[in-house]
Image 1 (tube, protein in one colour):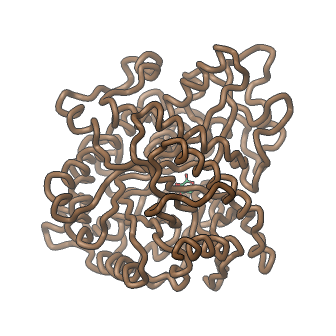
Image 2 (cartoon, rainbow, N blue to C red; image 1 turned 90 degrees about the vertical axis):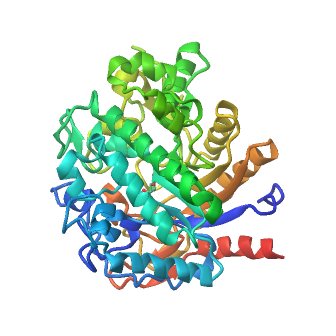
Amino acid sequence: LGRGSFPEGFVFGTATSAYQVEGMADKDGRGPSIWDVFIKAPGNSDSTPSLPPSEGVNPIMHLVRLPWTSITVTRIGNVSVDPLACIEIMGSGKVNWKGVAYYNRLINYMLKRGITPYANLNHYDLPQGLQEKYNGWLGHEVVKDFADYAEFCFKTFGDRVKNWMTFNEPRVIAALGYDDGYFAPGRCSKEFGNCTAGDSSTEPYIAAHNLILCHAAAVQRYKAKYQVKQKGRIGILLDFVWYEPLTRSKADNYAAQRARDFHVGWFMHPLVYGEYPKTMQNIVGKRLPKFTKEEVKMVKGSFDYVGINQYTAYYMYEPHPAKPKGVGYQQDWNAGFACKMLSLLAFPQTDILDVEITNERNGVPIGPREHSYWLYNVPWGLYKAVTYIKEHYGNPTVILAENGMDDPGNITLPEGLHDTTRINYFKGYMSELKKTIDEGANVIGYFAWSLLDNFEWRLGYTSRFGIVYVDFKTLKRYPKMSAYWFKQILERRKH
Ligand code: FCB
């Protein structure tokens, strides 16, 4: 990597998520998820996750160590039988033991192969039953239900799982699910695609608030009842697109700062300081929910480590008559969505923040654009993002939990295996990560997204992030060059 090796004990792994790799959507007692419903609406996804069963074990997992995986409540609690939280179902003897057995097989298999499981309790999905019962993340009732579900997982898997995360990217759930409606449950008050009527001016903030409380309540249970005995740790995964000021002007600096506050600060601030960032309080005003004194106690400091998902960076600037709106996106927006949509996808609150987002400065792109419409290769963005967390949030323990780039879905074999661009991407980002550690950032691990080509949400199977190629028809898996490269890094570290 050019900068010497990572510290001893530094963890390497790959990440996947339940909904994106499991398939078996209606098998073995799994109940419906909000994503099952969402992707059925015309235009919401290029394809549906109907892959056949993966049998609970992954034959190529031994290639890389320490995969990050996620558990989904839709497989454990049989919510199709009873639209209540799984613990109540469990209480009445309705645990979906087939789902529990699946995760037991997965965990045991990993351990047998010398792989340490890092388990995340929620990656975007939610039982559809809870969506219908109390409007999902908008209903305060979800806090107790989530904590109960988390506790069931601690109790059931915690003898073997020592590294927990509560949520993946709650910002994405709140902003894309409730502001622009681009992700499930697809609510917004604007006119995009297949949105169902919602209120973008309040709902993202309510959903985020409940997500934070769900997280904190789960952590509280873990700390009170399981942590000491099981000797584990728990945290949360936050996405952090780096926002660089377009110019050195005060106005652009402040625009970028507002954007960071509304992005990573939305969650990091409450977790570290017990309140939302001042910029958010000022701009969102009364529409921003408040934490009660009791809740502050529960939320503040509710993590042992933070996972940062870091892929790309954009420029931010204060709107200016001389600078066109959303510059850059007009030219290369593919797939026929409105260009406004892209800036919303990257950053849904641009309207109220009064910031503009662009991918270029003086006509020069921020980095080489990769296959997807949103991902630019900007390794220094990772450096800045991790350093920002170190400097603004008291140098917490950090895992770089997702990082990677995609190839087009229709790339065939054998071309799909020659992913030298991906290797270069990894090299650049890992090297910047190493630099943050040399400068004192408390980073303890790096996870590549993703182990397998998988279901990339709205993009369906048209985007391949895996270091292992998956033939989506036969499900045969072929390690790409990047998988062998990754393996080499790990082997060298053993000696
Ligand atoms: C992250 C998501 C993950 C995948 C990658 C490309 O934001 O957590 O599921 O979609 O982006």
